[in-house]
Image (cartoon, rainbow, N blue to C red):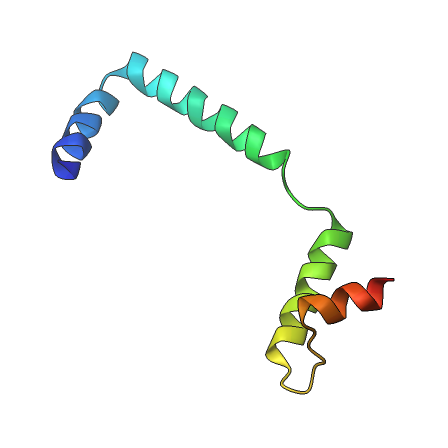
Length: 71
């Protein structure tokens, strides 16, 4: 089924009107995705979390311990 769809899509992309609509939808989708790009602080926090997860000496918490720490 996937191959048939890909063949159909390839045929449709040869049509310039279809291609214009398709590219417009791609651009719209990319613009929406850009609205969800994380800010620098979020990216830094995610990188820190990755480093902590990779460090075997990093302190780990159970859910109960984490909640207790937050109080």
